[in-house]
Amino acid sequence: MSKLYGTTFQVAYVVPDIDAAIEHWTTKMGVGPFFEFPLPLPFEHVAVRDETVPNDHPIFGGIAVTYSGDTMIELIQPGSAPSTYREFLESGQSGIHHFGTFVEDYDAVMADVRARGVPVLLEGSLPISRFAYLDTAVPGLSPIIEIIEPHPPMFEAFDMIRAGVRDWDGKTQRMSI
Image (cartoon, rainbow, N blue to C red; front, side, top):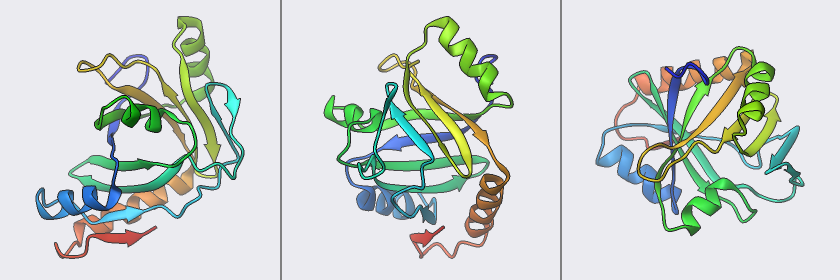
């Protein structure tokens, strides 16, 4: 647990091919099924480095999540719009991109982030949450941190995913949220 950013519940991977990543996780790792988010996400607001991104610019090419025990595994394939995900792949990296954490007081955490001078790579809001990606990364040492202020529909969706994982037949690789 971070005293600044809360408890980690999610490990997120940025991948060039979400289909291949889902195939690997389900067949080689025995982790699944993956629940895919319908795209485009219904952003109320999204900004990359404080620049608002129009809704018709796809940040995501694919997003899928599952659980391994109590840890959420998220796979992200970047879309064509500029984003921290696209930059990660274009820099020659792939793999763990960020840890996701829940925060209780998003506004207070963001005020502290700005006071500390931590760059905000991506920030937005959805009907299920507010979130920000913080540039806390040191390549090979620590990933980016995503802070999330969850709203009740997020917990409902995560409970549905946990139930799907608990009842997984080991064959179905993908499901829709």
